[in-house]
Image (cartoon, rainbow, N blue to C red; front, side, top):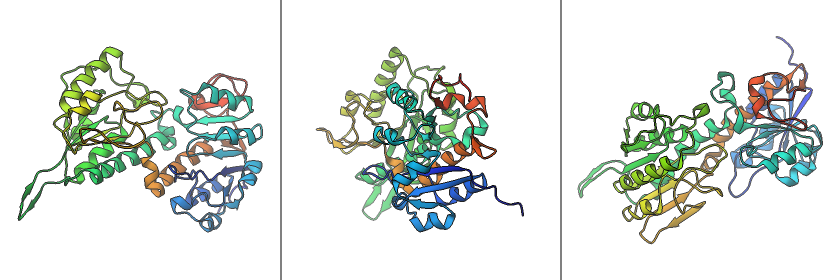
Length: 379
C-alpha cells in the first residue's frame, strides 16, 4: 500500500453556529479525504455540534481540535459556510486563503477588503457550474437542492390541510394545489418532494428547457402565455429579465396564483437582487389560509413583494414565510454536501504539497488575489 502523502497544507474551519446557521464547512469524512491529498485539518472545538459531529468524531478522523485563535494562526486555508466576517478578516495573516460564498457579485467593498488584507479568496459563487470538473465544487447546487426539499416540508407543515387527497368516513379531502415558481435545482427538489407528499404540483420558470424538466417529474408546467425564449442565462441559471418582461410575468403570475393553496418561490440570480415573481396584488388575490414560502427572501428583497426573513400573516390570512436559511435546517446532510464542495475546491489548488493559483485557468474567475483582477494575474 502506498504511503499517504505527508500533509504540508493546513486547512482550518471555525465555528459558524448562530441562530440561523447550523452547518459546518468540514465533516470527518472529508478530513480523511483531504489527508490523502496532503492536507491536514484544524477544527475549532464545537464547530460541528449543530450538524451532529462531535470534537471526538473529528479527532478520530485525524483532525486536530483547537481553539479559534489557533485555527486562525496556523491555517494556510480557511473554509466557510458563508464568508469570514470583517472582524475575522482583520485577524487573518496575509497570504491566507479563504474559501466560501464571498458575495463577490454585489459586495465590491468586501472584495477590496480581502485584497487589502493580502488574502487569497476563492468565491464559490463564481465557480463555473457548467464545467464538469467543477460540478463537485458547486455549493449553490448542493445547498439549493437541500433548500428545495425543506421548502416543501415547511410549506406542508404551515398549510392547514393535507397535501394528499384523503378519503375518510367523514368525506374526501382534495389534494393541495402547489405552485413552484422557479424550476432550478431548488425548484425541482421542491416539485419532487411536494409530489411525494401527494400534492398536485404546477411549476413555472422562464428558461425554455425547464418545461421538460418539470414535466419529467410529473408536474404540470404553468402556461402564462408569454415567450421568454432567451430565458436561459450563463451557467444554467436563469438570466435577469428586462423590466418589460418582469412586468408581463408578474401580471400573469398574479392572475394565475389565485387558484393555488401553496406557493413556493425559488428564483435567485446569484449574488443579485432576486426577481419579484408575486406582487402584493397577487398575494392579496390568494385565498385565506394560503401559504407562501419565499426561499429567495433576503436583505436584497425576495420573489414576493413585501416578504422578509421570518413568518408574517397578511390581513387577508395568507402566511408568508421568508426562508433563506432552509438548508441549515437539514444541517447534517447539508454539511456533508457542503464539506465535499469546499474540500474539492481546496484539493484542486493543492499541488506538490503547496497551494497554487496557477493550475486551471477555467477557475480563475473565482479567484480574488491581491494586486490583480480575477482571471488576469498569475502567481
